[in-house]
Image (cartoon, rainbow, N blue to C red; front, side, top):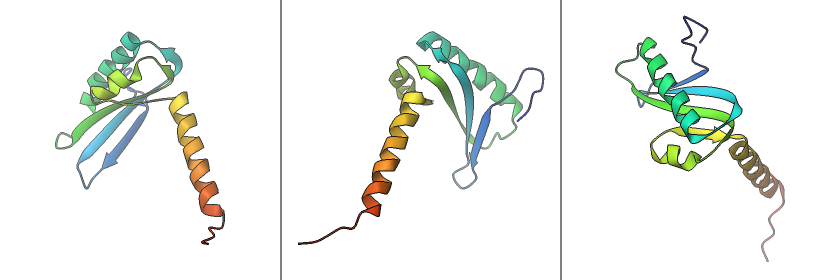
Length: 106
């Protein structure tokens, strides 16, 4: 979205049909729970500069690693780290592999 008085938002996704907007902060570091929550709080503050008042705002964080990320997810945040990406890639590869193999019925 670009920088404007330190109010940079790294990623923004919109669903016009459901009227939802997702703000995501990206950090290339290992985050402890306190630091992760602090980043999410700052992201919520920065979202005030985006004028989509009729949309339901959601917030997310992507980082190298995030300790206790399940707690953040339970609080309604979208949270992913490298471990999650590795799992997603492994799942996608296994699904691609199983679809590529011929299926024989006895």
